[in-house]
Image 1: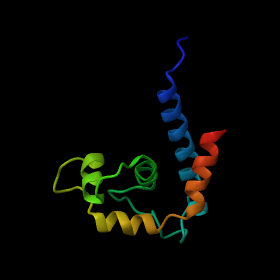
Image 2: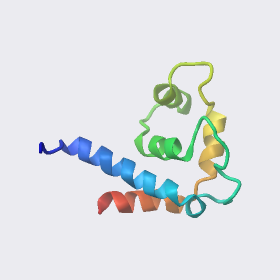
Image 3: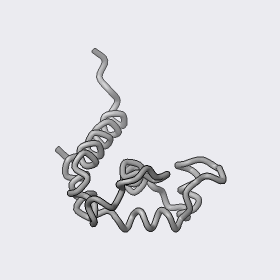
Image 4: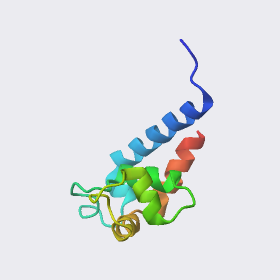
Amino acid sequence: MKKKAYPEQVRTALHQAIRSITADLPACVKRPGQDFSRERKLSLHTMLLMLVGMGGNSLSKELYDWLGYSSETATASAFVQQRDKIRPEALNYCFTNLQD
């Protein structure tokens, strides 16, 4: 079996950490039962990936880079509103699991 390259190992570990976080939704949102309960353009999984992987561009540019250049792309305001629903402990948990 061929060993994965280090960047691929990190990417896989990040996705596993985010999947484990999103499996326990009430622990990572501020208002369980309300936050991230409906299907949105910016799901919790997408939000966590973006928060970890965003570069230094403007928020609008980052959204276009991540989600594509379309009129259906989420707005910067939508991103900020979704981000506000995430408890800081969720990202802390993600980074802790990534280090293990």
